[in-house]
Image (cartoon, rainbow, N blue to C red):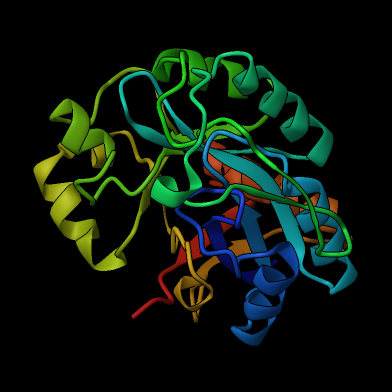
Length: 259
């Protein structure tokens, strides 16, 4: 068992609200400077920068997690993380088939830059990525689970697209196993206001939701994971299992490292 410092919600320059400096290489470099070990790329409604991110992170010894921040048709943000790059990319194609095709206006929403493994621009996404897709929370949970990944509500302590802000409560269905906070200090308030979270023993994480390099967590959220015999695939699988609530038997424990 080893303690891993994680940031599981980071946007690249492909997200229109992400800074152009949020290239895969710059994200990896900042994560290394901050002492992080496990980082997830979760652009809005797309996985197209995950291949470059995955290769660069592995090349520098970080453990990458490919994912996406999905905007459901309820306008709720959900983080979806996968055990391998190929499955994440397949889910990205599934999302693409459900997206509303509205042309992006870079002057209003920002550029949507696709990067290659050399951290050079290979294209731009034509259609806007931040609008809701035709996938409900229930279907998102089901589709991610079917692919062996984990889907959980993002930044439930924020008013912008948080599940509580959008729905008025933490719903009993779908049966999420985890939730994300933007600020770990809000945990006790969330537990007291929404007892269902504690009653169901949901796993919690705190992530940066970084859109700028300076937003990337400086300390990470600590999760102790079974990594023997060590491999990045083993750590990534242990992380997903932990988030799925399978971490009670020596698979993982969380430590709030954030101030």
